[in-house]
Length: 307
Image (cartoon, rainbow, N blue to C red; front, side, top):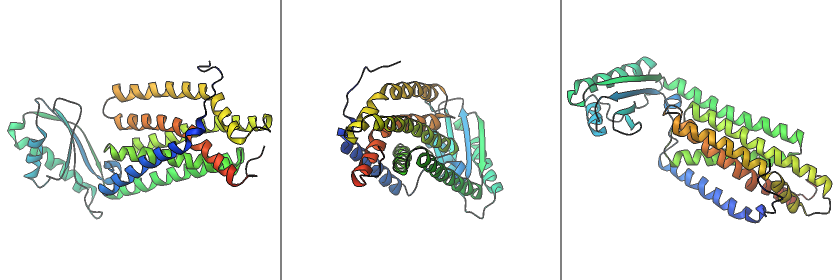
C-alpha cells in the first residue's frame, strides 16, 4: 500500500528549522522544570497517599481545601477529575524519608475524616486509595531512570553492530531528543510522572527506533546502488521511499492512542497523552533529527559512512 507515488520532498532542506524547533521546546521544558523546582512526580515516585473520592452533588474545590486546612493538610494537592465538580484526586504532601508508610496511611484517614466532618460537602464515596512510602518512591524513581539509560545503551550497541557506529550515535541522540521533548511537554502541561508514563516513554523509545532503523536500512541499500549521488540526496531518497510506510504506521498507531486518550478513562489518561506526544515526536525526529545527524557525521568524518 503506497500513499505517495514517488515523492520528491527535500526533507533535509528544513533540518536547521527542525533543530531550532526542538531546541525551543526543550529549553522551554527546562525553564518550566526549574520554575517548578523539579518534575511533577506522582505518588509512585514521590511517595504519599493518593485518594480518589466522588461526591453525590457538585462540590467546589475551595470547600474541600478548607476542610483539609482545618486538620493541617491544606497543602495537599487536589485535582478535579473530569467535569461536574464531583470527582477529585487528593494527594498528601510527601513526608520526610524517615517517616514510615503507616504515617501516610494515617494522613489518608485524616483526609477522609476531615471531609466527613464537613456536612455541607454532602455524601461521598472513596473510589480508591494508594499509599507509597518515600523510600519506595525514591527507589522506583532510581530504577526507572536506570531502565531508560540501559535501554538507550542496549540500542546503541545493537545499531552499531547492525549498521555502523555513526548510525548508532545518530539513533541514540534521536531517542534522547524524543525523551527530552516528551518530558518537556509533560512539564509544560503539568502532567504527573508516574510508572505508566515511564512505561509510555520506554514504548516511545522502541517505536521511534523501529522507524529509524527502517530508514537506515534503506539508506544502506541505496548507498550500494547510488555511489555517484551526493550523500544528502541518498538520505532524502531513502526518507521519500519509506514515507508511505512511516505515515501509515504512525497514523494507525495514533488512532489507537487517541482512542485510549478520549475513551480510556482517567486511569490511563497520562499514559495515552504521553503516547500521543511520543508517536508524533518519534515520527518527526526520525526524519528531521536522525538523518540530519548522520549527514553531519558524514560531513565531518568523510570516511565515517561506508558506501
